Length: 150
Image (cartoon, rainbow, N blue to C red; front, side, top):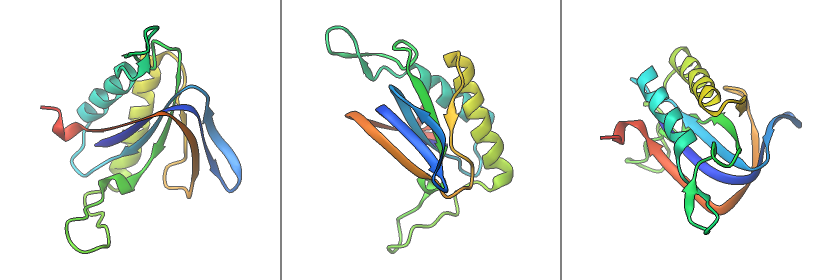
């Protein structure tokens, strides 16, 4: 399972011109689920999302988490994070989990983050054609792969 976390001053996701999720200060998370991912990957990544110290403290040092600053989370499913680009110029998505695995794990990730954060997670709609806008603060962008945790 892979996530891309971006520290944002604002972010929103819309479908057919209608906003379905939006936040102010916080993190925008793109979530990619791969074949073989489990609830253990979800729990580890959710804990990382909430505890990652990427917000400035009073001395201007990145030493505070999204939970510490009272920020919000917008999570959007993103199967293209599983792309293989080893051969040729057309990405391959054979590692992407199908709906039967990806939807429950994406929903579980959102639920785990919400539980740890103590407030709802804004989200996109799995499988929809979404338009995402954000103002990356910093910019700060972190990529985390649950298979590279050891």
